[in-house]
Image (cartoon, rainbow, N blue to C red; front, side):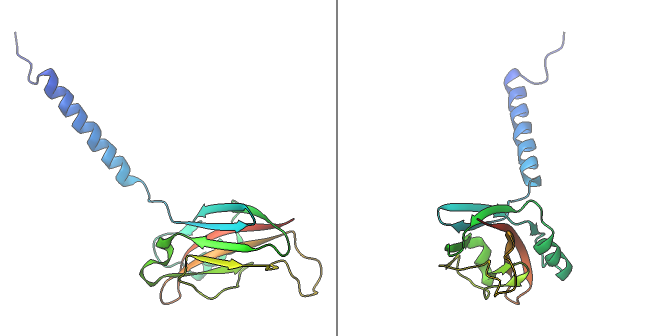
Length: 161
């Protein structure tokens, strides 16, 4: 007859330690979610994580791809004259970083270190007399480093109602 090498209590302790270790290993493999950006029109808001972010400076080609090719961007209705509000989490502007709004690939604001901007009565669908307004526009929030190089892009669709 042989004696067990470990008592029942010791086996449970080893099993618990193994489960905790496995859990920590799984958590370390998870990517930390990117900070959120939020677009608000009237009482409606949509928030999204960065669609383009790899932890380093984005190339010009990657930024162009992010600004034009995203199909899963969140959509919010916008009526002419509505107040457009844009916000980012404080992490976006830490360490000298800034952000700016880009509408259909063209910057509409200067880089800002504030976490919130409001545009009362903005008509983002104005055409300047150049034909009929489109039914939607792509709005992006671009995080830039101190030197102005793009780091992340959040994308949204504004839908004219």
